[in-house]
Image (cartoon, rainbow over the protein chains, first blue to last red):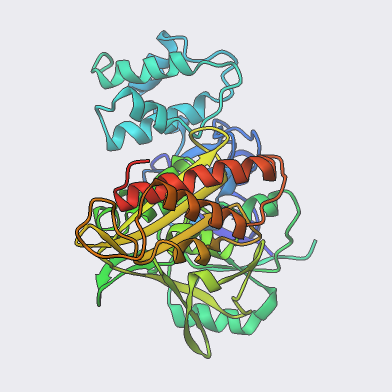
Length: 157
Length: 295
């Protein structure tokens, strides 16, 4: 049994056929070839699959795909505008806020979710904002600095 | 594998009809944060998924002297609600400290209860605050105290066909406190958590005390013996007459009794020995903060 799932992905309407138990991560990676959300644990622990659903951060691996019907889903693929990297992407790049890069898409989305709600967070609020995102390489310090730089207005849109 | 059916009803009556029709075959899906990992790891093979996120059960209201929270209200919304912070401080704190931002966005209060983890963070404050859950089915509605809702790890009084509709928290005059000890500060399950509610008459005599422990028994636990030794006690400097003084020694006695009522286990997060030691400290700290006693 397959169901038609229609939603908005990075501003564009998409339709795809899914099973009831397919997660949003399955839908994005396996059906739509949108691979910035990473499959780290499939258990909600690592944060590498974090995406925005209607502007709120969620774990794609814990979200049954069909529940996003009609909603807006945003991934790192939708951060850049007109070929120009998002301020967070530029800040991460310039602050060396990635080593292997596996956690980076989730970190970027967690950071975007935080700054969309709270454009001038304290260091503590930034740490809280990325508290659900694990980085095995230990780039936390650089990630926090990159987010601080964006919050301080050093990277304009 | 057999095809799994999916329904996303938009009316409560429609959802209850589906739950009645599929009975034990139906699995209720809300935020999915506890359910979907079990599907991903093949621990759970659902036959029929009934998604309840479109039923309008996402609300926080004040009505009839109660805080009423819809079952599908996300933890993040509870953590951010000024109304919850004002009327049920321990619940707001538990919501704020649970999991991580992206889990709080999806995970719901009803799901946290229905999943019936002994360490469920929202269960203890709800027990301490004397909250109830409203359960609905095609046959009707019933209201159950949260402290009577759990039967064991993963087991509740919910019957096939039944759904948690909302949580009702009585708004009271006293002070509630929630404390949690995890393996680290964020994104962690409770090694032990404690919620207490204390009401002090004229700020000096304890007229109501409730103590609840999480991750210390097969179910979130209300500790009635600990509560009993606090009732009627007055602050040492009080002009009011009371049975006993509510001082450091009394609070430690209550904490000891609470731990004596518990039955923690050794698991990957902590030993039972450590849970007892740490739990006693947390109960004492929470009671002292709620009663306004220095310890």
